[in-house]
Length: 576
Picture (tube, one colour):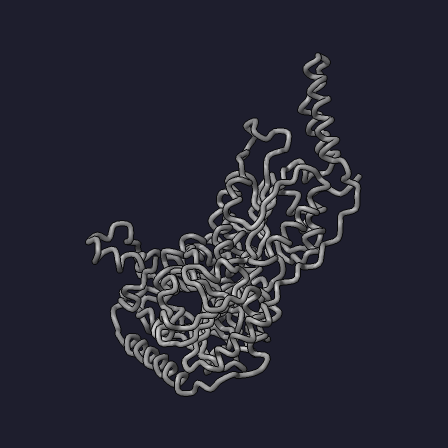
């Protein structure tokens, strides 16, 4: 008897580099979970399907191997759609396996039977549905290939439940369903089911194909790299902006960082590129990016499109020379046509560009931008001196920055508080920062943090929650406890959806829908088996954070609930 479909998928996933599978159990996918465990893959079961996909997404981004999530049919798949769309917008390569009703019962009112593939198609790089056992592994391998090549993103493979169980069990099911009556209708039904199963299991005893080698990424054109170097040599005010796409080859981030250092260009880092140059690199700038782009005579965008984050290209001066390196020609030219387009991996483009070393001296320009950075930092310091009844969010973030270990990974989930933290808390190194990304999805936090702690078990993993975002995934404290993943969560609790309220109230004169409570999030974490700590005043914050670090080192996930004072630090920050 050949192996079950679930066992086949488990062996194939292990062969493709999957070390963890994130899931929420369901009858339609049980053989996948058992097969993965038998193949040596750690199965981490969460409390919401979205968290499973967020965790798979983070695994891929952090270089933790193939990111895989398995979700059950119907509502399991629909619950995962937001997280899948978030991964697509972030260009994150991952595989989502979706359960489905038995093949013979599709469209007949079976439990949780809906059209899943058409629903997922707009949000994934590739999708397919297996209908025969012999298709499972080839389709799985194709899904991984499509998810990781070119501009990456999620791939979705639908696997009906009867394709996953062993043949004897499935034939017994259908035999019992067909009954033993001898009338013509019953005999025709048994004949039809037998034929259907013969086709479904035909060729199942064949050996599964070995995985194909990864597709080679397109090398940026040497002529474009050379011309960019020539433009750089003539520039007097160059600026480099590096985005997440430049981090898609985790094993090469060190080479990318070294190339940027050789180039000597003032650099702004965004998305997954935050931390690429370390904590205090002289080329890495954090503030006043818009002013720098408007004054620059040469702007190099490495894996960054001209979307709303760059005001659709309007942040860059009209007269500036623009070079865009991107895996997608269309994305490189979105909203603004560059002077030069380098199609290929953005990180590799920087490696090639930096191979000849620095091509110019821009000491005065760097001094100007560094001075602006320092001025903004001094302004933040002044704002942090304001005291109220509770805690200034800037003070909280500065304390976290001071206390967090050098191996820390920071996960940001929220609007105003998370964005405030990004101004102050510096990732200590590459691939140590995760945030909602361009889709602006709240609820990523716990899934991202679970994956980060699973991938880097010895690192401090800090999950910085806005109080609005926290409620999306607090139930995952149960997952952290069950799977021994001691994350440190900090909730910035100002009892409001502040990023929205700050604009809604003065413009529309009504705070409807934006008011929350000083909810006891720490008590909720305790209810799930974690440790909860409350800090309502500035004097209570540092002891609370130190206790959180101690509890996490002892293996206990902990949540620090910090009552914040209102602030106008980010007034006018909403982007559309």
